[in-house]
Image 1 (cartoon, helix red, strand yellow):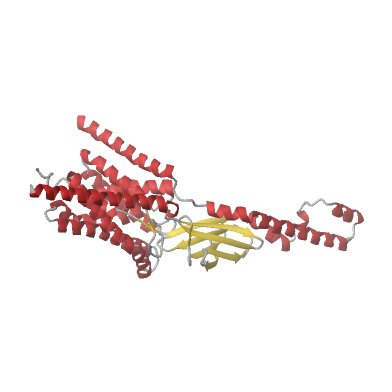
Image 2 (spheres, each protein chain N blue to C red):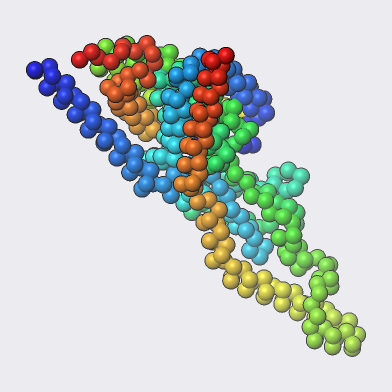
Length: 208
Length: 219
């Protein structure tokens, strides 16, 4: 899902960079001191996730984890994704520096959308089933929306939308399922071990 | 008592899940590491009057059916083709100029490889008038020079071309394995040092952010 340099038109690049800057600003404003380590750890997870190759399906694809970042961090997913992508571009040559803005937007915006759509299920956390389902939905929806946004950026740069988006979405179908499951498992684990990570609003640790 | 055992059971189940996940992730990382990169690469080399290209998605996986575009130095598109099953695409050199070979794979992936004009110079020279410039000081040449016979010169220049062709051919043949090795080595995916370095960067950034956040709080 990393768009390479030289594929997108300058207008798309500038718009992406501008929107990403706005998103990062919002994220940093919401960032509290005690949340900095968890943002860092999730950013590191996002950074490494791209190395986990999913050998299913027609194309070479990898985990993204933007849904997990979204439902745990909300708007703070923007700075986390930006840092992860910048390091991927510099160290692995995934994507590129000029496309950093667009790529961050494509990954972080779906994360924020999923935070608003499914975050409540994870914060309330009363019913186990609701919790699992919303974590799964958050994880897979973020990948789906990300694929659509990649298709959209290609479309805005002159490619036909439906074929471009179809290819990206089809290639990421296995990732959607895997990420949904992974997000659910991780969220369940966090709920048991470190519930304060799942947004401060989550009920404090059970009094035994 | 009953609730207690129920809870401990749930904790055990949670741990099981966690370890399953951990092992899955570790397995994925270590067993698929060589094929884990997610970028496309193209490698092009000249052999005689053709240019061969090899395209890959990630390390080792060939890019099948991807578009390959060839541009000259001014950015005019000269030709276009599709990679075959092995991710390879070959074309005759259309003209003697700097060539830019661009690979366009799906999902916004792109890579390029430049071939400078002097790398393909040999092709142009064969048909061009630059042959006499080649500095082959052979005994035959000297002999012909001394006799100063025009038809003889032509014969020698032909010989020169043939010699050059022969050298080119045998060089191509000898260098083929090295070229293949280079093609394989152009992308070997992210290395462990880069991965750990990246994680280190992120933790360092966290430290810097915490430092500034704490200083702000003190003020």
